[in-house]
Length: 160
Image (cartoon, rainbow, N blue to C red; front, side):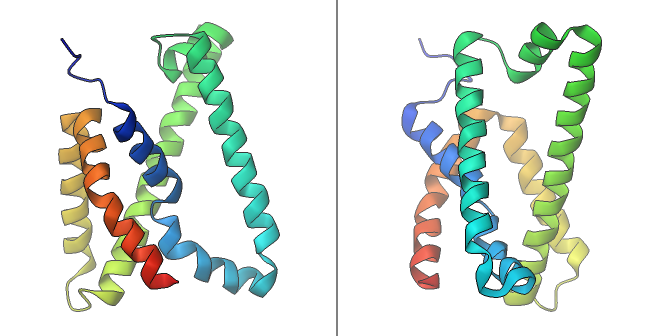
């Protein structure tokens, strides 16, 4: 019998793709152009390679510590005190990333789709959706990403 929290390979693939592309595909081109005009492609390529190296490092760590999560690995490799500090840094990082994604989505939706809707209402709807997805676990998140990936392909086609 399959574990309730396990996901299959296509769901893992879509989670990785959506996590890497995510909201950045909507906001990065204009932000990069404002900062560096047409010279931003080199830094974008370097950052992409850097992200792939970090993902490879995570892969080998998780393979070495089979069945453990990144928080357990931090405590095993760095000790209890420093490991807990690393865990706090991870949690702060993910909280800040969540706030940034929420504000970017809020700005995009308010600009293009719902210009007369108050920003607190849009943010509340996205927060409710995110909380509902997180409460259900990784399997539901994988299914959701599998469902919305064709929309990402449509968006890339329309941008092109």
